[in-house]
Image 1 (tube, one colour):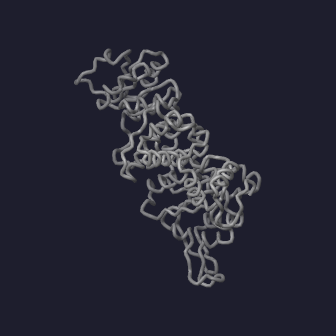
Image 2 (cartoon, rainbow, N blue to C red):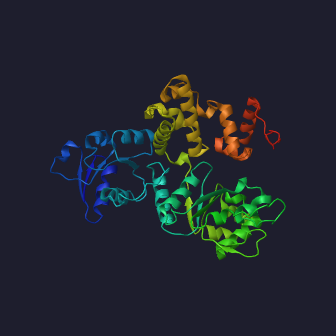
Image 3 (tube, rainbow, N blue to C red):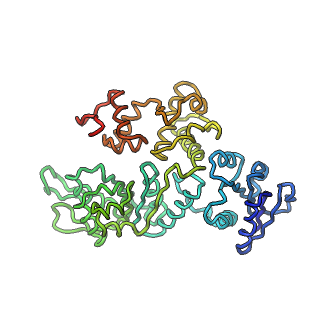
Length: 425
């Protein structure tokens, strides 16, 4: 395997020795592309460009995978490299950098291997998540996904299902926080006809519906302790007894659970069963918040703009990195979900006013200042998505519950279920 390393910075040229440490790798280091003597008779498997040589990416794109290695985790540098034709952008502090580069050159991932839909980015953090998703998909063990609200836990759960041996079976998502405690047992385990007043017919619960596939338990930290004990029994025995039924039924459903809180802390406080915790966390995937994924934001913007264009038949262009400053400067407490919702609102505004996204961003006040196009409709939509649970709606919007209350008051939004909108509720 032949690798060309182009740059004259000592911090980048140290990669020469790292790459040579891999079997069957030949590395040539040059100060400039011109000094490399590139010609039709030179068959390269990988070109690595340091910051000083990054501008050569357009000339080399197509000849071999081109990776730009930067000295800083900078979104502007990353998007510039990728738009110039680079295959990837990494930083010198990327874990196992040499191994990652040689793996790319060898094309170790088969062409037939499915992409991981929704996991967009080139940062080391998202690369680790992809690796863990493939590892989890290759087993049938329970998986626990932890991460802040909006980091993409259901995206990861669906990816594990689609890449695994149960892809032909159902994927059944259940939001534990949205199930009333009085109905939780029926929701999970089902019930027989006549099991209680109003049970006019038998019903299969989520566990039986997921038989042969995957049951995704989102926000499992809100599962009542009484249900935790019964779920543990299902995990141990593989049997479900519906309410009012005289016998249990076998089920074979893989469990993938997700939490936006540290479950271990809940175990320590007695709010979550220790034995169930250990059963669920055979494999653990920790999702990083968007603020720790530096270079990924421009790639996510590109992804969401393209998705919006496909859904609505529009042709919005992706702003240049220099035009994304309001997005890059925002802290994104609501993570990827907040970014997606914000971009959708901005694109709707751009379409209504006949402007492009870059112009809307340039004329918009700071996102940190609360600029939300069509704010009332957005708040109502998110509240509906979370069944008017203001704490979770505020987290999804990336604001505090007090801020949500104030905006509900400003727009005259009232809870249809009768609860008042005070911040303390």
